[in-house]
Image 1: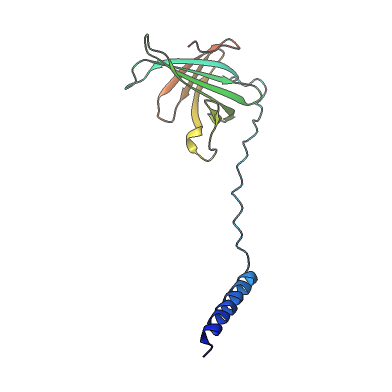
Image 2 (image 1 turned 180 degrees about the vertical axis):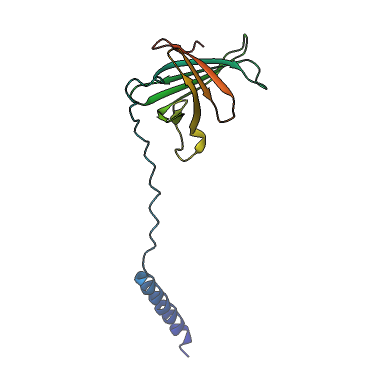
Length: 165
């Protein structure tokens, strides 16, 4: 006869029990964000390393319209700048400007890019680590072999030299 009074009480009691049970459950904790990989510190080159300096390469490459100019700037403190410019007649030059660290590993020049055109790069992306076999390095001439097997011949430029745009 008083069923209409019992139903709301039963509903309220069930709701209270559910709230109580939910309060006893362990809170869900989001996993911490992955640690950001810290940029490596550049290691100074060996005293008198013949690779230290500004090296300019100008070459034509099959399938590329124009001349590719590459300037490797290898500082004694292990810092490097890599500037590549595509010069195509009267058209504006297109370029790539990377900075980071370099090191010599026996007969291999290793360039580790940290910034590409001013933006930080993913340190896990292998495209930002480049290895060149050192064929010869003398006073004013440097010959490297890239991973594609193409020889890069560069000449020493004066300190502070920059590619003209």
